[in-house]
Length: 372
Image (cartoon, rainbow, N blue to C red; front, side, top):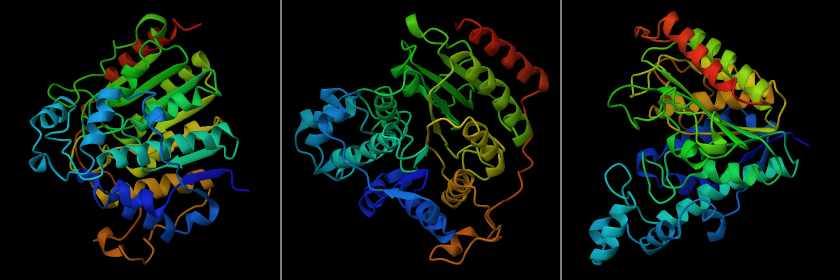
């Protein structure tokens, strides 16, 4: 039996594509994974649709009621009920999180997919579970934010807490995993660690190194704020130093990793200067712990690069080296002009000095020293 489960179904793929900001991305990801024949090494698990009470484990009744009431509308312009329109706006359904038809169904399916992946680990059906359709770390308890409508990550972590005493969450996205940190800021059984860009005016504006959790959760939130231009080697070295100490201090029993691809060179965010090998070295570092591990998607606005990244990470899990040439398949033309899996980093200057990174490690080590 395969030791890696990947949550996937045609319904999940089609539902995922309803998110206006990411429409079409899931198709590229899944078909590149299939073109590389990686599915032959995976156990494909169809997702269970999340029940209302499962979504309500994190999201508020008011928020879910609002989404359910708007489920049949394609835009707010179609709604005649001013009260519903006002409720939607208060719930963040506007601007970067527009309304779309089937919005409640989307949350039930995408949220259910990550719960299903967590259950694979709980039931020992797999040592690693993958849901590239998940990773929506900005959705709050009662509001959508940052293109995220359902916080599947929190739902998965809550599910894992049913069978593991200490669960570690690691966020590799360019943006701070704010809503996940907020959800567990008072918890000492879930530790959150986020590596992200932190700069004036950069969304979501949270995640300073001094944000460490509250109450019983003090020093169980670790933030690694970075500047533009960081490259593979310093990023991977920083990751290894921080995560080795996190492992030794927290002693996790299971790990969830959000593998956002918006820090890659070539992403429209134009911030970090990472390659898929750089992110891969971080994921491999976690996989080498041989703990039950859940890998999730996240940001990534250059869709072909995101597909490259998650196909590559999948290959690391199943230990199948991939040829650098993109296989011929329906979306082959999307990978031009080089049609290769790997690409070199860009020439963006790295604003993270050695002194800055050393000070970060020193500060974070001080935070972690408070853990028993």
